[in-house]
Structures are given as structure tokens and as C-alpha cells.
Length: 187
Image 1 (spheres, rainbow, N blue to C red):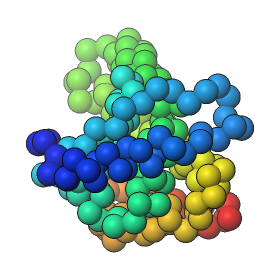
Image 2: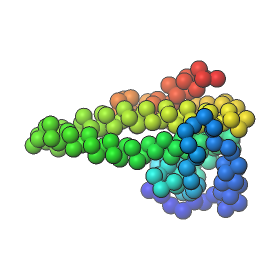
Image 3: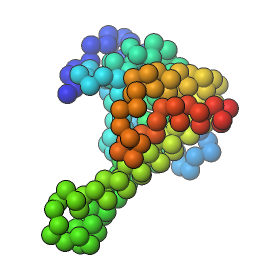
Image 4: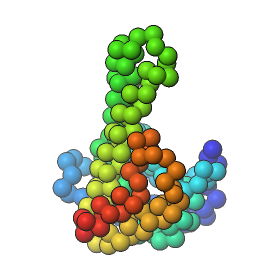
């Protein structure tokens, strides 16, 4: 699914340095977590995600799609928000707990049926986490003097790509149109 990045090393380093120069928002509890930016090429397309290890993975395709370093900073700030709030770690713990309770409640019913409630709760939690990370990114961009319009560009471009393929309750992310509207309200 992922291959080594084809972005020139100088471009990768410039993006790393630019992001490292941004100050995390002071209103968020605690210091920003340690992070490392990793670039990969992906057959899946534009994407970025944060791992509990502190790695922020950004695909070459996301950099190419955005063509705007301030928009790239918005995506990276969003991923730093996930690290700050420990979303992935919390999600793993929550998913395990919900799956265990679901198995206890439903017993020997088909494994597929017993995982549906866990899946629905996990997707809801994920959408909430995405909104928290969006909020973190907006505060961080403002704090660093970067117009929120750059983050709006990200949502607008993702909206063109996602095309409403999944019903909201099966999606891990809020619809891009909803994220865009929420961001515009925050301005």
C-alpha cells in the first residue's frame, strides 16, 4: 500500500522544517507531543495520519494535491492534534473495550453481528476525533498567522475526491462539506 516517497529529499526537508517552526497552540493542555514527519507514496491516494509512536505519515499524493505549503501545514497541524489528544491510543482502547462488552452481551451470535455495534460506536468516536483535530489545526494555524482559508482549501479538495461514497455512519471522517462549513463558522 505504501512505497518509499518520490518527493525530492530537499522538498521533504523544507516541509519538515516549516512545520517544526510552527508553534503549537498555547490554549491546549500540555506541550505538543514529540513527532516525526514521514513521507510515503501511496496507491490509495492523498492521505495523512498520525500513529501513537509520534510518526505523522503524509503521502506524496497529498502534497501534490494541495500544491500549497500553508494547506500542507494545516493537514500536519490536524495530525498533530490527533497526537496531542492521543486519539489513536484512545481509539484502540475504546475499540477493545466495546468489542469485549459486545461479545459478552451478544454471546455466541455471529461474530459479524456482534461487531456491528462496536463498528458504529468506533466510527462515531472517529468522527468526533476528526472534529477535535480540525479544531486544534484551526487554533494552531491562527496562532501562527496562517489564514484558515488554507485549511478550507484542504476540505474543499477532499470534498471533490470523496464524492459521498459512504453513508456518514460508516465513515471515519465527517463529510468534507460539513468540515468546511464548520471551519467557515469558526472564522
